[in-house]
Amino acid sequence: MNSSSTDNTRLMSVDVLRGFDMLMIIFADRFFSSLHEGAQSELTSALATQFEHPEWFGFHFYDIIMPLFLFVVGVVIPFSMGKRINEIDHKIKLYPHLVRRFIILFILGWIVQGNLLHFNIEKFQIFSNTLQAIAVGYLFSCIAYIHLPKKGRYLLFALCLTLYAFLLEFTNIPGMGNSELLSDKNIALYIDHYVFGRFDDGYQYTWLLTSLGFIATTLSGLFAGELLRSALPREKTTVYLSVIGVSGIVLGLLLNLWHPIVKKIWTSTFVLFTSGICFLLLALFYWIVDVKGYKKWAFPLKVIGVNAITAYVASHVFDFPEIAKQLLFGVEQFTGDYYNAFATLGGFGILYLLLWYMNKNKTYIKI
Image (cartoon, rainbow, N blue to C red; front, top):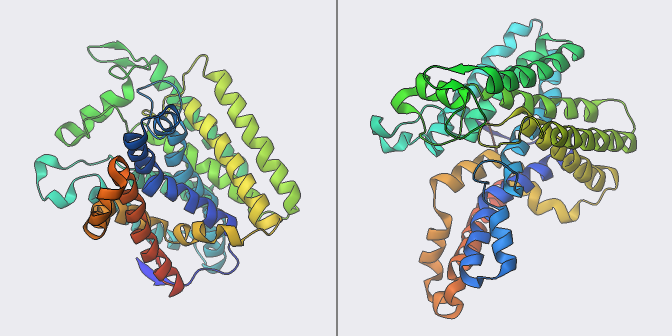
């Protein structure tokens, strides 16, 4: 990783959208849960529920956070890789950067959620984190961008979704029968248990075979990035992003009747549905920030977005709300049942000040 200044030509809306996504991860989920602990109202219950994943079938707002992270990574690929391709004389020279980034993301995933810092092999998990899903999606999407024509990338996207859906629906699981979209009887879960053994994460989430879905989600972002980088007028780009977004949502919901939307195993309908939402969110932020030029309101989100990896890793390694409690312990007598929500707000404030200071000094941690 290194520290450097950002590229002045980059679209601010992409950083703002990334910052919005990080805000949901590093603050909103814990805040609404803590708020409900204090308020115990129907409204706070509904908000808290939307920031939890469904037990299995269905969709909550919180389910868009991880796909949006992968999607935005894909959006940036045509900008970053397009520039690199023009600067080298042979495409093979791009691979050291790709492999390096893949390895760093995987290691950070081990630190954040793979229990690497426990220094206990019994607790170690090989593949269990969003950053590792990004590593896979990024690597294969970049390879596709480098070597495949545009139609080839579209075919790869369709192949990933079709193959994954087929495997989930029609593969035979040894000793269990036909794979089904159930929490304890699907081929993706079986493969994770079989390959990772005692290093499996032990939950209903799946990772190895599900990488087909991670790749497809990142590719969808790549397609959006190509639209943003094209010579189309910005207003028309916004329309295209919106139309694609609505189409993805509709297609995902229609196919949901046969192949249900399940976030924990990242079904192909989940990819289509969430990618559609991501396209619409990108269209909205792009239209407001880069087309209409309303940028001042978005500065706090940009501060988070330009150092998103730092925000994500730091929020998982350090318990900022607990740190805030060491500074704000005297406020508990006044806040009562709302103290945890107040501490969550304070913890976010500490993290934001760190990110603001980094941005002020033009320090951007890149991988």
